[in-house]
Length: 87
Image 1 (cartoon, rainbow, N blue to C red):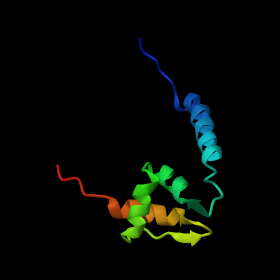
Image 2: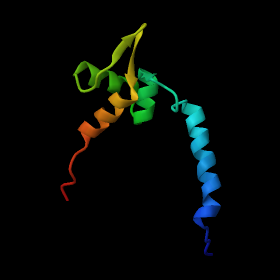
Image 3: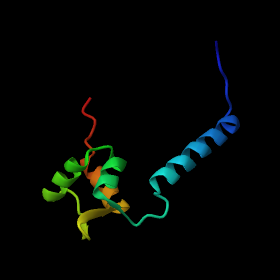
Image 4: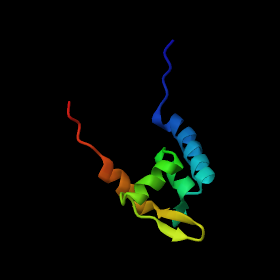
């Protein structure tokens, strides 16, 4: 069985999935994310992010009882952790 789908046919599904993820995570208008939210966006556990903050690998802002991270902080953290492909 061979299934062929054009980009125009696929676009509504991609748009719907993207809209659902933006709504679920509320990332379109956010200034900062809690430690738990930021860790989820990075795909790591919150204690791993906390430990990275304590080692000075990422900057977090103390807001209320917890720490928050800007989108720029998260992107910078990921960029610094990139390793060159050694293959």
